[in-house]
Image 1 (cartoon, helix red, strand yellow):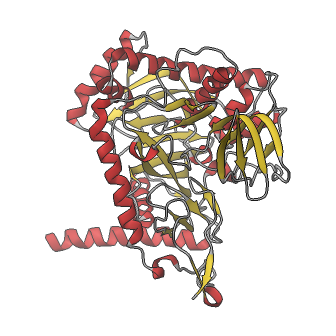
Image 2: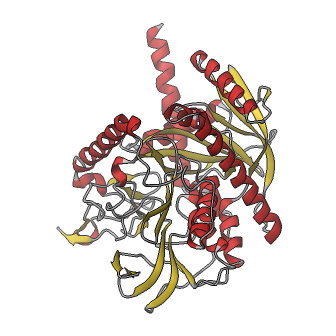
Image 3: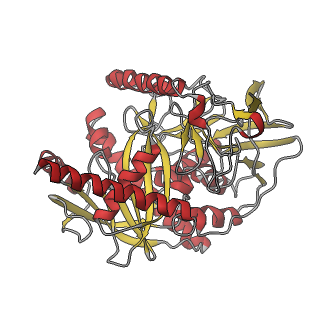
Length: 498
């Protein structure tokens, strides 16, 4: 009996792995790219080629940066934006594209870490953020496949049913109606849903918003250093410098350590996503707790996320993608797209949005809900620059100290150390691979990749599925040619002679 069970498990695992590699090597059926980046024509923006002066420099072309740019468009300030790579192609372009205030167990975390009053204010901020996005889309007539949906939250754990019921009571006290109904796709032991949430195409939204902008924007322009010089900041690229009175860091993970000390304020979480042909009823759902399952439809596809875990734990991408494919197969789905994303999880559950020192602003730490919080960050920061007030400034203050989360800080430091240990254990052979046609990409003609992340020297791990070199410490990513495609690193990795 045990032998037959082992045989079935072996055959099942073999078929999953065979299916994955058969598709991955074909190049026709399975694409290792986000569906949002594949189903849109990239727009080209120039690289900075001269010294510039401005009032506001925004660093980062994702949802936070573009939102900041948009909300400053009617000011009398001279504003510019620089992006290290391509607009909207990093975290924003790898997201699930949800605008939702029913955010897994996050509200409960904020209630536990603070109180119901702050949790209610955070909830209000997310509802305001959704309305802000919808209003922008309607006002600017943006075509980004916006769709109003019911958002489901579920659990299959008996121990969590009581928690969701308490969350329902909290929502009711905040005048939000909840409903009970099961779904066809996933059967939960307990499932609720709310109205007035949305799904959309995040990269289309970014590109269309850029078209409404009157300020200069630059791609492939990496800021290497920022220095305070009197009342201004001098920001340096490889060949040019930008003088700015205000600087907005909108680059997901800040590439500097001081004065923010980010490694002790949060950790990184990696998730694995897919898009599969799906023609059943519309769906938008998420599980209450880790390991998270998140799903939504997009036209004839289902975008499905799973295997979320600390970045230092999620170092074997191949295994995680294989587990994702098995979950899809259990639902009778087969992936057409596979990709991953990295989110910043803060100690206390609240984002860091606002001023970190004189005229230096930041928006980061969105706890996997970057689309609502990124748009909100752009509005808050632009209001602060223009001298306007916001009811959320104190809530998201990046300089806040929560002594009750000291254990969280210790845990985050541990996760950083664990990432370093895993990175340093990488052997040279681990970062040498062959491309689909069998030709070597690394170690060709006697060259090998210098496999240390330029950010803080952590060893890189090769992602066999997406063909990238990934840092297990802080999430920097490099393509097969060594170009940095995601920070906090602001430098490429180099090649050297054997």
